[in-house]
Amino acid sequence: MVEKKEGILFVVSGPSGVGKGTVINEVLKVIPDINLSVSYTTRPPRKNETNGKEYFFVSEEEFDRMINDGEFLEWARVHGNFYGTPRSFIEEKLGENKDVILEIDTQGARQVKRIFPDGVFIFILPPSIEALLTRLRGRGTDCERDIEIRLRNARDELSEWEWYNYIVVNETVSFSKDLIASIILAERCRSSRLEMKGI
Ligand code: 5GP
Image 1 (cartoon, rainbow, N blue to C red):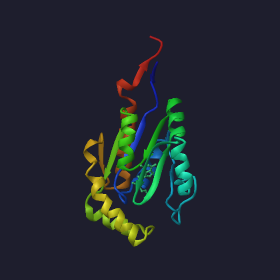
Image 2: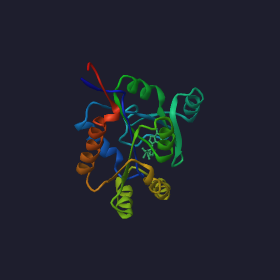
Image 3: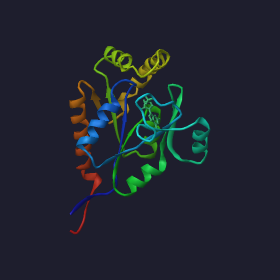
């Protein structure tokens, strides 16, 4: 009787090391009917990463070609590497009335907000700067130079929190997962996103 008018785009940002990836993976377990967009990047894969799972890893030449062919919904240079969201995946899923979740930086999120003003923008904050530092260093996947760059950029990214619709302080993965799942479920019930059929 009542149906969603169109798929909802959820955008999650937060500084490097805040635990976005871990939290989103947990959200996907409890909300299986949401599609995670896999970005393209020129960053080399980390030890534990697989092409097509965390990212599609491409050369700068290939990334440039994709920019020129309009294949990105948005793209940005983040921590010295390029990252982009595939336009076709997002448009296809939303067109099929399916929800999509993106994990992108604040520059990318701003671009997406212009294209999809009705998107839901969620910012994950660390409980403290110290907690962020500890996590970045403890992760053991980035070299010291990369950690320095990520820390320097963290302050700029943190200053963007205010324009996001929802703020999640990542005290524990489990509670942050509950919060984001609640946001997704509540947005799906928003009257402005629904239409009545057959009355
Ligand atoms: P990492 O290298 O740690 O996986 O990601 C670095 C940053 O790039 C994170 O803030 C992440 O959200 C962001 N990022 C990942 N994919 C995209 C994308 O497609 N577009 C943009 N603008 N940022 C992205």
